[in-house]
Image (cartoon, rainbow over all chains, first blue to last red; front, side, top):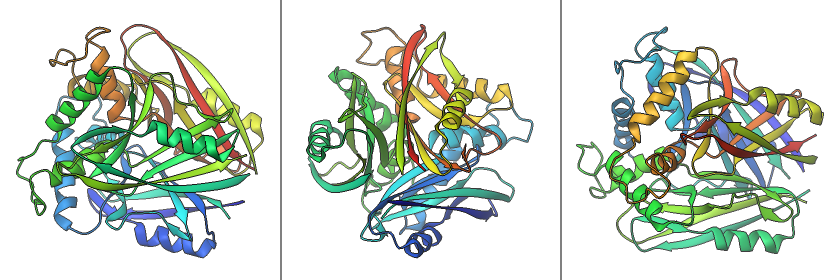
Length: 138
Length: 138
Length: 138
């Protein structure tokens, strides 16, 4: 059994879902592990991770619109030091996840056919985000 | 340290919570691991996983009713290719999880007294769902 | 590769977020693991875990207020055996997480600068809560 780790840097350009499946799958392939466990960890409190539908673009738009409604800007938050999108970003992060764990089977992530891995940027301005990958396996 | 994996197939008959604790606990027992880590991964974007109260049936009904309200059908979604329950299913999956990690202590899952593991079917029609189990330990 | 486990007991005094980062980071240091994976598991259905901003106190207040609004008391729940804060506690747990996984790099948790680990007590009365820590690494 062995471990491998990597830190991915992702430059986001706007609020919303950014697919990272390809980069992560490529890193997994390069590790040469047959069976294992991948953990993905987002080192932020205003961006999060989500596994969601990777086919219909409308699904991603509806998800973005939904989280904008359920944790809206301008709802009288005590914290708004960094602007109106600051506190909603923390809430949308709390409602989703900052870590994902995905088994590796026969050298590949055990994602379903329609599952993609997304970084969910919750701030309006571009940000540089760090995601830590940790793989255990053999 | 060693690994074991399994894929469970669960046929759901309706929208709602389906308890899978017994099957998963039985699989853990059969692996003969004393200390370890179980990861459960749901290979879908319209069904999810939840650890919740396993005693009062009313809790599960209230949970089902709550998610039906918070991510309702007919809310003007752009995506409705597969019917009115399609997009709400993606949103309810995003609000819960597709992966769970549970430590194994003295050969048993470290669940609390009142915790059960549930597959949360978000589509109205019956579906065949796949859950991948990954165990690390010794 | 080796494993270590621990159970932390946390006495909560009121509804809200209780930071547990220091205790968990101290335990990690004591294990002497360079690279690894920490899993934190909350053994309850009315308290949960959250990684959130550890700097501005207002963020935590806004988070507490938000979850009180989004899963309110007195919303006509079928289950209220243990009082009006019972069912909202289950819903707020379902919307957040009972498990977290965090990589360990160079002997330290890979948390971002602004990330803290919180136990989220959802009941009004004081409770004794158990959190299981599981560390894999070498």
